[in-house]
Every structure is written in C-alpha cells, then in structure tokens.
Image: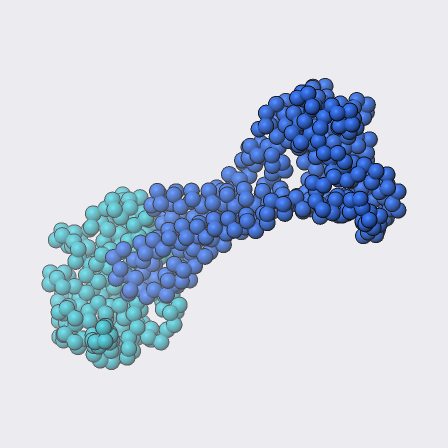
Length: 389
Length: 230
C-alpha cells in the first residue's frame, strides 16, 4: 500500500485546484443523481403497476373518448370483476401555475380497484356520500394547505363551466399511496359530478369516457380478458385497445420522448466532462510529482507502490468530489421533490441511484488515475530525478 | 576489511540523438567496507553514472557490480528496489526531499518499507534528526528549512534505515561553505563513528579532502589514480 500520508498531502497541496476539481465532481455527480432520479420517478409507475388491472382506451388515441355504454359491456366480459370510468379533468387551482392532476372516476369503485390509495385523514364514506366530495393526495394537500372539509375551487380548462365559474369540490379525505403507480399529488372526484354538469349544460367539454379501468377476477387469464374486450368492440363504433396498467403507464413515459435515452445522453456528457476535469488534474499532479516519484523509487519503493500513490490520489479526489455530490443528492431529496412538486410527483433518490453514482465516481477515479499511475510505474529513477518539476 | 564493492569491466553507453557516448569504459575498481571515498574527475568522466550503477539506480551495459557479495547487475527490478531499501542510503545534490512532508515524515519514509511499528518509526526518525542536529525542526517542511538544514535532513533520511552504504552525489554542491562543512562533518561522523561506507561524488577539492580516499576518474570513464587522503 502506498504511504497514505503522502497521497493526502499531495492531493491537498494545491488547495484551490483540489477544491475546484472536487467541487466540479460534486456538482456533476449531483446532476447524475438528479437525472437518474427523474428517470426512476418516470419509470416507477410502470414498475409498480398492478398485474390485475387493465386499461381500455380508444385504439385511435388516448384523446378519443369512448361511449358510456361500453362500461356495462366490459363489466359483462368473463374475467372482469370491476369496471371504473376515468376521465382526465385538466383544471387548475386559482392560477394556471397551480397545476396538479385531477381525475373524475366512479367513486364507488375507486377504493376497491385501487387498494393502494389509503386515506390518512377523512373517510371513504364521506367521499361516497357527497357528489362534490373529493380526495386529495397528501403532497398536493400539503402544498396548498388543503384540509378535510375545505372547499377547493378548480377552474376547468378542458371542461370549463359555461357560466365561467369554478368547479367546487369539498375535501372528504387526504390519501397517501402505498405504491408508486399512484402518486400523492392527484385529486379524485365523482364521475357523476362531471357527467351531470355536462348533461345539464352547466359545463362543457368532450363527451364520453377517457378510459375504463378494469379489475380482473382472481385467476383470470390476462391475455384472454384483453382479447375478449378488444374483440367485443372490433366493429365499433369506437375500436378499443386494452393494455396492462404497466403498458399504459409506459405509454405516458414514451409520450415525452425516449426519456431514458435522453437523460442517459446528458449523463454521459456529464461523465465525460468530469472525467476530463479529473484527468487534467491528475496529469498536472503527476507531472509535478515526477521528482518525488524518483525519490520514492530510489529509496526502494516498488513500481507498484509508486503507481499506487497516483492512483490513490485520483481515487481520493473523486471520492471527495463524488461523495459530496452523493451527499448533496441524498440531503436535498426532499427539497428537490418539493420544488418539482405536483408537476413531477414521485421524485426519490433511491439507494440504487446512489450506488450508481458511487460506481460512476469510482470509474472516473480509476480512469483518471490509471494513465498517470502507469507513467509513474514505467519511469526510471534516473529520468524521474532528472526532472526539475 | 575486504572489498565491499567490486566493479569489474563496467561499461555504460548512452545513445542520444543517434550519437553513442561511452561514459564508463571497462572500469575495474574495489572499494573497501568502512571506507570514505571521494569520486572526482572532469565532466563526462562518469562519476554520477558510476554512483547510480553502484546504488542500483541504473543498469550497466557490461560488467559486474558485486556489493557485499551480491551481484546487483543480475537482480530484477523489484529485487533491486528491495536491496536499495535495505543496503543503500542516498544523499543528492538537490536534497530531493518530498516538499509536502515534514522533516520527520521525510526521514520516516524509508522506514515504511521495514517491519517497524509506527511508534518505532517515529522514534528512529526522531533519533536520526537529533543526530544531524535538527531535533527541533522535525515538524518543519523543506521550504521552511535552509539549504544546509535540508541536506542534513536528507542525510538523516539516508542513515535512518541503517544502510551499510551511503552514496552522496555532490552533497555540498548547492551549499555555502559553512553549511557544506557541517554536511561533510556529518558524513565523516557516519563513517568514523557508525562505520558506514561512503562514496561521494564531488567537484570540490576541500570536500574531497574530508574523505579517506580520492578516486580519480579520467574523461571517457577510465580509472585514474587513487589517492589516500587521511
């Protein structure tokens, strides 16, 4: 093992250079963690999707609505236990900047089809009884200060009120999801509230159902159920496409492009940049320490030990910078999640992300250190001592 | 005492820019254990090259170098490094202390290659620095020491692992007269009191007079005369 005192002293000999390089590594590793966490958040819904839920949507597009009557027909399909209508509402609270998802759904099916939605305040009974009741995820409730019993006026964008007023909801419950396929930022309300308003002309917007969420009977064959539903509407009036919940979630991720590839490209660029910064620092350090390398060799330190002095410097430099970046990513998780808020729910810096960042740090340390280390290893004592610095 | 160092038919050739330079040309020389030798000669006579070959820092093109019964020319790189750590202490003209380490840490460096405990290493280094009169400068960095003090630290580093042979390349070359005299007095002490064999390259006649024997090399790396001084 190399003399670690020497490794440490050489590393901190030029404090400004050490701090600047370590600082740039810290920022780069923090960025890597951030980007990775965004991808993880995007993919979390796909990974956590329930196996017994199916989504029925128009085969043409998610934005083509299905006839209301499809619900009854789907419910009659063998292997289907429950069906729920589900519409994207697309409103905002007070100001367009206050965005969070709102869905109209069959309130009497929601709890049974989505057992992961757990109320932490309020009651399901209250939610069922009052047509204007809603339940709100705790992230949104916390952000806007919503409490059970509060009135929440939502301005309809996709479904505006014809008299220009707001849709008024009353908070009957605050929920927290036990799985990542449902975020804690959504507001769910009665489908009938929307349906009645549209029927009466109180509200305007596209008629029909956005999607049907199907819960399969225990033991039902998923492929068969999907085929039966699709076959039933083969002749229209709207041809449907039944997918698993995971496929449906993946569809959303792919709608904003190949995010993992995009993020990986940025991450790759960041990696190359920090590698060059670390390599530059190590090359300068190796050049400055050439005579010291000669002295160590003259004193009897082996080539491997001398090479180790430089390799450990590189690893230590990266460990400091990368470690700081990892700590920064872990310690700012809540702040970043709050900042991303309901626009990007589910931000979480997972242990996997932190380990990946640690791996990237180690890789940069090795790659930046191996060149100078090999050079030091191959340098003859005479040549090294001849250098003036 | 018998010959500690036996050099036989030593040849060293450098090739630079297509030109071949024969620095040592079949040198034969015996150096006895416990001797203090000053190696003198004009530039290009191969003094430093000879010192590097004897210290195992460089390889001869031809010939044998037997030190204390071991043919170091036949050793592998790692064997030679181990041999240097155990048998040789070096003192260089430019001191060659590691600038980021304190005097104490510089002197401790060779001891990292021994089995001594951390406490023992510290104690040995402290003793070596006290021997060279720098017990109160242990925590100073090289940049905080004068040239003479730096060279004394280098001598402490050379002797701390108790080598049988000390090789000094122009140890007074960068020093003023007073500092040079201090350094030479120390080398004499190492030789006379501690029995170290010393081979010192120097251009300085006054420095050479401190040795017991002066070995003159002629230009072209041939042995000149051998002169007993004291």
